[in-house]
Amino acid sequence: RKEVEQDPGPFNVPEGATVAFNCTYSNSASQSFFWYRQDCRKEPKLLMSVYSSGNEDGRFTAQLNRASQYISLLIRDSKLSDSATYLCVVNPNYSSGSARQLTFGSGTQLTVLP
Amino acid sequence: SAVISQKPSRDICQRGTSLTIQCQVDSQVTMMFWYRQQPGQSLTLIATANQGSEATYESGFVIDKFPISRPNLTFSTLTVSNMSPEDSSIYLCSVVGVGDSYEQYFGPGTRLTVT
Image 1: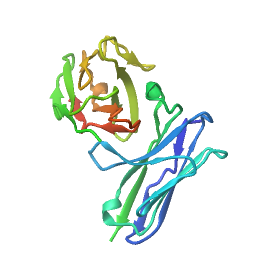
Image 2: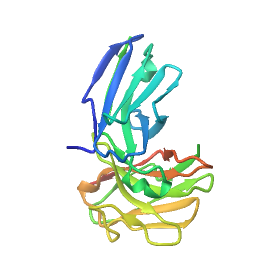
Image 3: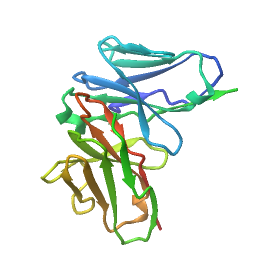
Image 4: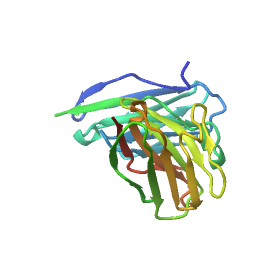
């Protein structure tokens, strides 16, 4: 089993749609969680961190379920500019000294269609 | 966040040669890392660049192949040695510890093609 698993995608949705991505992690001791987006031929950029029961930033909502070891990302009112690959990232230890264990999911590709 | 630059942004190299990639951050950071992203794949951590001491390598990566330097808190280099076509990849520098944040930021990457 992979340490971090994501929906395989790709997701093709019309502009204005709501889309949700799921991510599961295998290490129950994991402490911090992130969603990154990566545009084609660009570096990953932090979209949002996910803390405790989740958080919201504009059209984006991230949720964490520790009991099920599950993270989700919800995008409302999709824009063309949301087209990218979304990476689920898990760090088993909140301390910066353990960043070697930072694990990336394989990513979910989203295309928002006009 | 930090502003991270990498040089070169891309290169095409011949088999058997070596390439050194530079990573510069505009502020002091706690930790610096080097990742590899092969075509169509997600990111794989190569090593943690430790200031003033030897880098800490992940399983499958060795110092002879990927020597790393980190002379100070804002700069690091990664060398890809004795390159083969399998080393063709994007190499990304990453930092943690800008201010009080534990969030991780990435440089723009170096796209390496080995012929």
